[in-house]
Image (cartoon, rainbow, N blue to C red; front, side):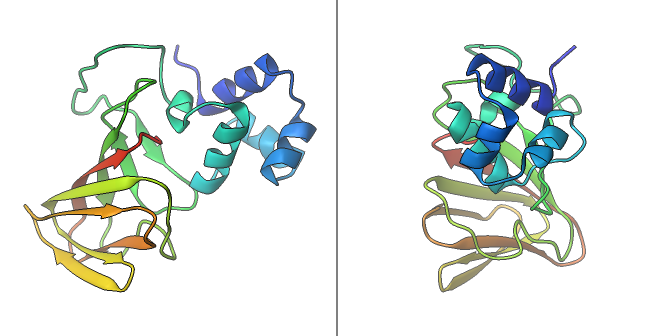
Length: 181
């Protein structure tokens, strides 16, 4: 049976001989919150999970990967799915092995939903290719409407946000580098 996010977090914290209190202090959350995450009672936000991963010295992919591999086949309907607490988007993970130089996922965004409530920025490049629906991508002061077949490539350090517009769920490929998920 595959380990859960919480189990992986607890294992890694134990390997580093960190207490819940010391990790919580480093991350800026309460020990009880981390305890809930380790018991898989709550899903952490992307920003919290990124901070936890940094303090544990692992990439975000660590929490979703089953062992080290050099190649992978991803079957429709069998992919790991990631839904973060602070985002309305659901990701099907296509790349899940440690050491990958990029992350690749299929994202599903319901009509009217956005990737985040406010534009976000992070040290990654992103490339988006729309398969279904329409996306409004806000990159800094620019706004771009993308339809099926359209793509966008941008620097993640520029505040950005993706919004599904129209009346069907937007489905799109997202590639990020360096790999964070």
